[in-house]
Image 1 (cartoon, rainbow, N blue to C red):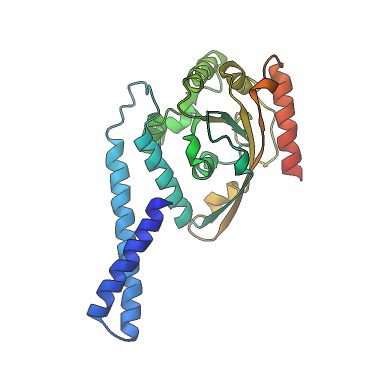
Image 2 (image 1 turned 60 degrees about the horizontal axis):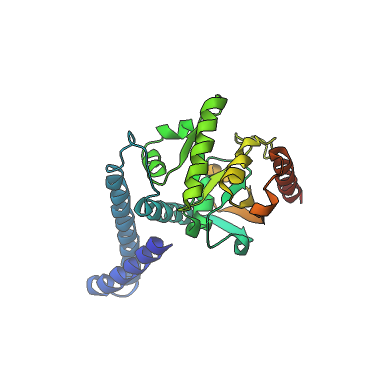
Length: 269
């Protein structure tokens, strides 16, 4: 992470310059450690202030026409910093399969609220936005950044409203500016077992004529329990990419069954 590394370097430089001038011997080491921690905390707070002030300029009452790269960059840095500070270790596998050119639809199992953050951290080049439950629109600050990068809110209890979200996501992918992610289970799995899919999610890729990147997450539910207290190991695995040619003319249910089986086998293995 650019900002995390930069904060570390600046904190080390600041402590190395000031500590010898203010103390010597053992006290210089103690003071150096304290100065390092103080500089690092101050830089994190300045960054948090910039993130907060930036959110003032996002107008939630207006439709976001394009992915805002500034807010996408800031979201990526914020997620990366939070992951490091919370002692989360992400073990990513199969990233070489993720397209570097062109957009795609990412699909994954869903076990915790922080699942999208792991993908933002692991696949920054895709400039991912997500289809998100309406409740997330009430999360202070997060909702502003989600709006700025064209995340789409979905009403899971109203099929007609959900269809509007699907069609808007198709439109975004056709424009080719950035990729989108969706959790086809529709809800978080409380047990970690893969739930039945809402196959309408796969219509997005079929209508937009983009490939589907299939992924699974493991252990993200532990993040909230362990945060800032102990290390959390999270697995993010790319299982494969279903090309456009294998989506064309195929019943959506068959696509969903195929991908469900891929995920089920990976999670059971």
